[in-house]
Image (tube, rainbow, N blue to C red; front, top):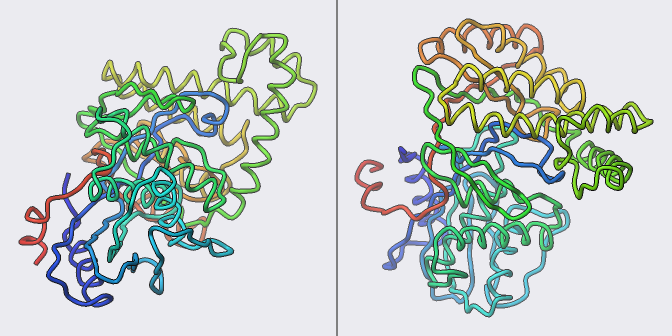
Length: 407
């Protein structure tokens, strides 16, 4: 996967301009963003999801310093952050970007690791909302710490990356105070080139699924609508599906909603008195079935069948889970109507952010022109479009493969 050499160069300049030149050699790390191909709002219901790491992400340059502190600068956020890596750190209220880094350092300190003093510069090229910039930063910092200290939870790579995922989530939950799930961190830590992940969020077990699209490609269409309602809607939806589980668990002997077989869905819906709870349950059970079916479609190279599942997923998120909104519905509706498009759906929390489109490679230019114009006419501002490359998870980058080209 190609490196954003221009951004790497900017990050290197920020490091030197912020903290001065140094004889110490920096080390370079890249931590991707992720896109969830299908399986929205079911990770907290015990379901499988299908994320993939993509080419956008966070670049981290780090070098030792002699001042005994971690000093950080970001191209994407104002100011510098400074803290003692081996002492208890304080979180800002409300939290800021540096708190995600402090939280990861705190996790390794709690494990008894003596942490180095570093100068760190960070820059990201993650577009829009819903592709998980916070998890990208957390996992990237964890990979950096382990590369610099030699710390490992397990000598086996997959198990160690699972541990990094849980550690990063714990940092966000308990230090930053954001009650996120594990999918984002897991996808970013465990990503594999040209593979999606059929992921169980209860234990981070993964079956890798080939994404070989032939004449087709994936594209992110960003609505450029801020996800203003996502947090409150998330909490409300969780409460609704928990209410459904409370009613259905003793009847169907299930521990989570995604354990309910599709064949039992109608019987379960008949037991739920509230029409809203019925719709939420229908989405969860049917979406989980679509994830499993998508794995089969991709493994069999049935690209058209996978596209149909994307369309069905968006309809369910729109009508049953009610987390799309006008901007995403307009964007997805325009996309689905274009020649060469096999499917489209919202991806992420909803109420803004991004959608995912499956389309023919030779239709990309016309697609962007037609959907862009239609969206601008309907909404009043522009959408953004980004091709998707599926790549590996967070890793150290050899500087000698970057700098000559970047310079």
